[in-house]
Length: 372
Image 1 (tube, rainbow, N blue to C red):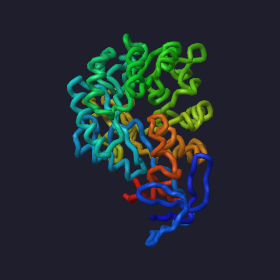
Image 2 (cartoon, rainbow, N blue to C red):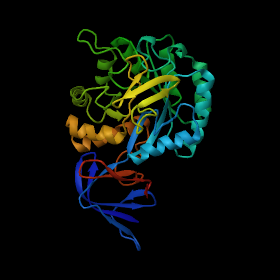
Image 3 (cartoon, rainbow, N blue to C red):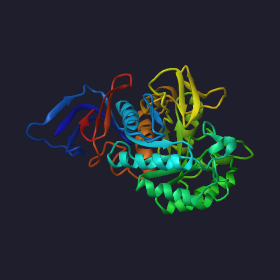
Image 4 (spheres, one colour):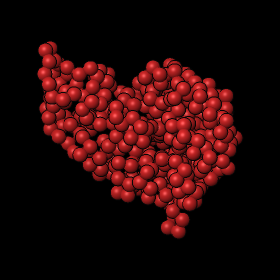
């Protein structure tokens, strides 16, 4: 038994001063046990471990090739910054390269290093491809999709696609039938097509506002379709680069913290500083913390952690701390279908948590009851 005393426990309904009891890696009801470890937090906040449903790497390492050493390094870096549940995102790649990466990542998911795989592509709109290699984009292919799902052995959690592409709605339906979350993103779809995708079973909008037809008062596009649909979780890259604070505030006001999922979309450069990097074979330049395709203007992911996204939500956007925690933990956990285990500091769930200092920075992290 471990007891965290004199804590500000951040729960979905607010902040509660008290003690948190942990036993066998789970949060338990108040109890005492011989030899229990007591840690006095002196009034510091405890938030649930962050759930990042969209991240490509960090600490100089990438998930793209599925190399175990790189995957462990990137996941470990984000774990140290509070992300206790990581979904490894892959950008567009050649068919055999994606297949090889998914098979390798499935092994690491089975070992608990990551919590699943997100296929961001390859079925994306060329005009909204962002940092994806346009020469590798292709039309939705059910045979390829099923091959990747089979190689993923139940660990392919989500696929982002542009719903206006030929065959896209059929793939959305197939994904829903196979338990894979379909996400609308990298799309130039009008609102009607986006709504059709949500009616077909799509349940996430990939990095809302970014790499999609912009919101217009005569044609709301995928932004309005996603925000107005209570079935849809909207991702936000809250790094101050992809979306300004006023727009993040607008998204929270329109969709609420129960449907806004903070993500990092972080690439290998996260935690590494300025320099030259690669994302899915595309050259990326990081200057002043901004990742841009070399020789261009397209943003190529971010260099933040979920710790940064969460703190920015509270400090810069003005989101109440319990709502920011919901958006960083419980909302993505719900979207992924794993909220019975993680996402909030409630009895029976995994003891995945982060203790914050007075500046809302990570003091230390616990995963399944073990301090890391």
